[in-house]
Image (cartoon, rainbow, N blue to C red; front, side, top):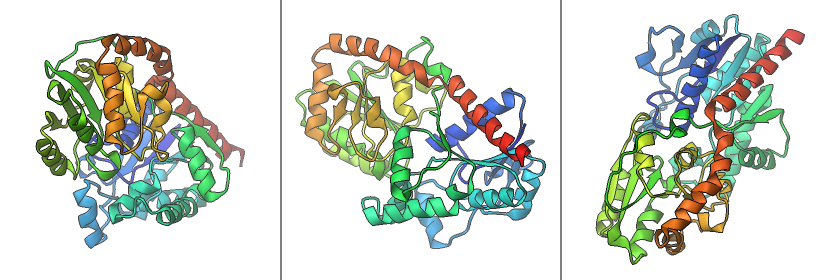
Length: 378
């Protein structure tokens, strides 16, 4: 097949959406498909298989986006027309200007369209201090539907959670597939491990931003009676890094903040003792699944706005959103008895098998093939 993949946000692989895009692109190319990627990543200019558009200029709004390391693509119809030429199917990653324009152009040309659901409303409203405003989030979901998802032939939802949430917001059921973005095989293989501290080490992965709520973990350890015996490792980058460092220093919590490459991450995760996922807004936390895949036991925020809570096997692996004392008690349950960690690792052994990335990518390929076939029937 000839497939056009349209990415409003694509650059360094430091967020879930970009990683999902690169994983799909790489898999489809390995399978022999002709893939054309449309994005605003200037580093890809002139590279075979990439069509590069300018960055969107929204004046003062760009300053807000820059703080959060987000750069949106501009909908250049000339570039899009070139990228869509002869395409069997178009796959859109985001309900933003470039993806919206690509879907419109594809429908005008009779090309079938699929679109992934990688952005929760809160990922948008967080930039304008409205993350906890139900009306703002509802309006955002309605906008997502009207500008993009009502136009596509198949919607890809990474989790059942976001499918049900979106359909409840728009009061409609759309043609869709629920397919995990999957975990890379490097996290399943029993390779080297790199221990970062002699202390009991807890990992927490995620962009340093409001919706990831890493401060809850810092406060939890500060409330515990084992504060001095624990090392927190926060993996990521983002606008709240300095604030989190100040909080850790003020609470006298031993915490390290840094970005790990995809090559480094499996080894350092294998060297940890426990994983905590603090995010209150999340469609699918691949980082949590990666931790589970290497053998870490997770303790997960029970936020109603996060799909990640569904990865918890029981109440010992869940803590109440924003409640540092409850999180401290859940950590203590495992910290006090290493045998419990070993037992839960065994419990998670079967659970994690459903998230092998190659299996998930084959399902994505099948979705694209079946949607492309719709165009041939017309």
